[in-house]
Image 1 (tube, one colour):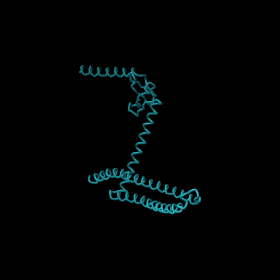
Image 2: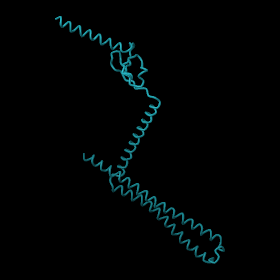
Image 3: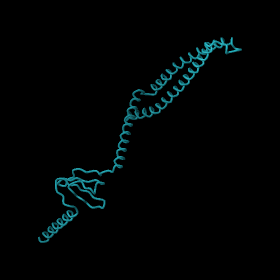
Length: 220
């Protein structure tokens, strides 16, 4: 019986010594909230307010019962805050980009459910340009025919073109300018057809991937 009492007494004394050591480690804390942290030297600190020596590290906030209520993040320097804000903006921009990309992909799949529909859309876009080209070529043919008539009139002044009427010379100049304008326009339409084909080629590569993913999802 004495041995049992002696063992209990030893445990009680040990607990008192341990509690005293913990209390001696930090200043006494009063109030309803306790802040605690481990500083740069490894020393555990507690206080009834945010701890100045731990602003660069996380602090735990405890209640009267010792239950953790929340944690206080480290206080950042201006440079760290700027870097954090820049990172957050970059993440938001990337998130927005991905959302827009997914939205475009869904719209493409709705518009082009298969390659046949996509090929038909390409053909229609090229046909519209070809219609415009046909009008321009017809206009160019008219200008060339008109120029031949003007050249016939100029034959009367072949020996001395300066004697040709000013109105005739003006018509020839205007005809040349109009032909040049039509030729530039036709070149622009050829470039437009190239852009259309390039756009549809890029879309087709994306769509083949999306069609494959959609087929895999439906089969699963």
